Amino acid sequence: MADNRLIEEMAREIRIDIVKQVYFAGSGHPGGSLSAADILAALYFGEMDIDPENPRMAGRDRFVLSKGHAAPALYAALAERGFFPKGELWSLRSLGAMLQGHPCAKTTPGVDMSTGSLGQGFSASVGMALASRLDGGGRVYALLGDGELEEGIVWEAAMSAGHYRLDNLCAVVDWNGLQIDGRNDDVMTVAPIDEKFRAFGWNTAMADGHSIADLLGAFGKARGTKGRPTAVIAKTVKGKGVSFMEGEAGWHGKAPSEDEAKRALTELGGAL
Image (cartoon, rainbow, N blue to C red; front, side):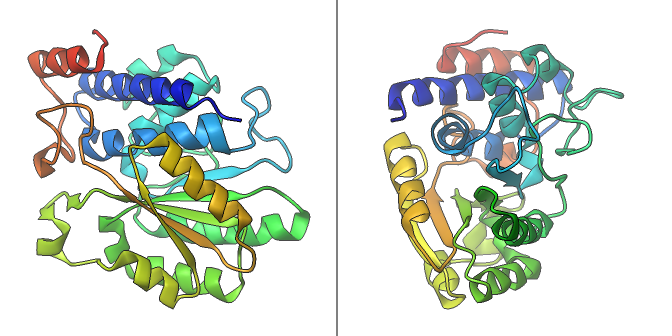
């Protein structure tokens, strides 16, 4: 059984890593990375069947970061889980570095799909789930942003997954209510998210995206659901964990200054 306290501590470390990565890079996407930290901690430290010593292990569970701009969160989770040395994090977005602005499956251990163009990662996860069912492989998890749901390709993929009854596929929506241009409800309303997925033949589960117990419970329900894929709608706060970033759309894609980074890390219990 997963140790929730350990996973909560890993989420805190992931948040510290996110702030430091984006600060050192001078660019990146802290807001949506911070909102996803608990989700990634729950997946990588409590849910998925993976092996950092053998990243390409046959039959492993797979993860696709469809909201690829939140790469700092994924990189932090992978480093904390042991897929590569943590020192790699501090060269984020540097020319020639392993970790670029969006995940690359060719260069980064533990990354199963190169992503960045919104919606395409989710579509690839449907293909992965189909292939995994054919060869007896593991489960597939895809993390989407709520603003990403405005992409038509998301619903084509959802329709396909429902049609093929991909019960080995679990989508997680990071529902923080904000995107680069402001509130989702002002830009393009995506609610009701759960009803939309159900209309495409999906099982749905609501979760507090900052509660490890809630998230693990939702993932357990997804594993127990047969004949339908599951969408976990995780209610989150953009910039979670850093007071001056929380709920602020302006932190979607902006690096903190040195003073801001120090303040953020102090709040998280870390340091530059």
